[in-house]
Image (cartoon, rainbow, N blue to C red; front, side, top):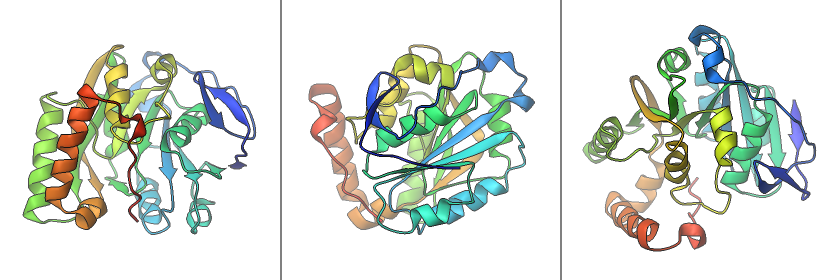
Amino acid sequence: METRGFQTPISIFGKSSLLSKRTEIGAQKGSAKQPSCRMISIVIPAHNEEAYLPRTLEALKRQNYPNFEIIVVANGCTDATVEVARDRCKRLIVLSQKNLGVARNLGARMAKGDLLVFLDADTLLEPMTLRIIAQKFQPGDAAGTIKGEPDRSSPGYCFLYALKNFTHRTALHCGSSGLILCWKKDFEKIGGFDEGLEVRENSELIWRLKKLGAYRYISDVTATTSMRRYQQEGLGRMFRLWVKVWFQTHFGDLHRRHYETVR
């Protein structure tokens, strides 16, 4: 099913967003179902992702867990992203403007599942991933991610992800590796993603979710994520950027900071 968005503001989780049709979906509590029966909604925001999205969707087709849906939210695309996604997902939402937070919030609003998986369009999941998530993500958990690895085997990238996985596993930093897990009821309760943030929006969401429950790091399965930004910018520059962003997170305002699109 395809839904096209127009510039008509509506209220989604208490925030102004874009959509042509309002649909109310009642959220179910995660604890009400057995792990093998939980409905999982995978929300994929996509901006000009014609090169990466096909592989992401093909990896999802190989999942050995039967009860899930794929929602692709194409936002501000000028390439063939919409054509790539059409007929490969349960629901396709098309927005005229680029906004990651709006795209994710709209996808969550349309989701039928108890458990939400926000997946980057350039991230590949192993066939067992959804089954393991359904088993491991507990009703007392409020946010989580899985083990990440780079799509390039260079020592620098491998060290970066080893460090990232360590901080997630030990909860030194409760972040994400191309994938965020949460219950829909909790997502609605905190108001969804901050649509004014483009930098560290994942960590900010997880920080608010943690007020409702535990952070879960699942190491049994792996998400393989594109290193295209690091390839273009370089590891040194990216490290300096993240140090600067960390200081701005604690002592400034990230709402005015924007990511440059890398495709």
